[in-house]
Image (tube, rainbow, N blue to C red):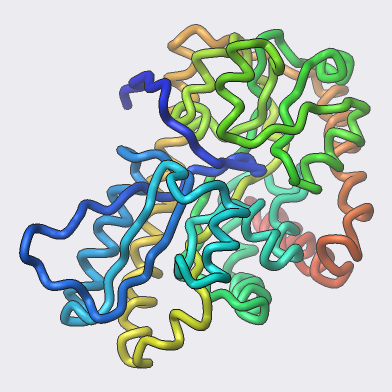
Length: 346
């Protein structure tokens, strides 16, 4: 995996961090017939990514499977605005959907943020188990709020990246930490750790690192590469604080306008390709962390005592958000599923 700096890249990723989701779909060849049903989807994810390649494949396969009845038009790189703007455009009919991080999904249905509470998951096997058990319920929650999930995407485990090493709570309190503006879950976590972060739109983060308005961010490794944030930090904390998820969603109104037989074909293609995307993203996220270290960013190891301290602070957020983001019963169902996976050796 080769890291290529690009100062103009902007990505709206996580916990979501952060999340990178999908890139731009190549335009139709000259003279090609437009599908009858075109789903216009916007994302802040950069071009040239794995997500771009998979979405291009999805678009091509959907067109073939539906005999060119259905296709996608993807707007990449935030050209349609951030996730809040994208959702406003969906409501107005200018767009039909978006590739969203947990932050955007939470604007639609706050309860889905239960998947991103701090220090919930230890590995991907646990995430897969929870999705197997509760994925349909989470999709139903989004559907009841007006959106159909075409597929879930992994943004990845989220780490702290900083100019000065962060290995203790004291280090974290001394950092000028970025906060994704409008993210209640991240804000609650940082409040629990005793710091006052700097709220910024994600598109302002790289510049703010350059000017030292902030000196620390949270991101998955792959997202940190895609945004080029890794070029402006010198350390990362070897303790993932959360898992960032995302999804491509379309409005029920737009999706239900497509004949049922064609909708089934779209979903069949998306379910297969999004699983492939999850596996590719996980592999490349691990590779990205290796490459970040090779670029000179040093790992800050956290002692077991500090791990316990960070974990306790993060998990104190769980009950605080009951009734604000998610119901207690859903939190209990998720944590029980995680415990089941852990008991089976994952």
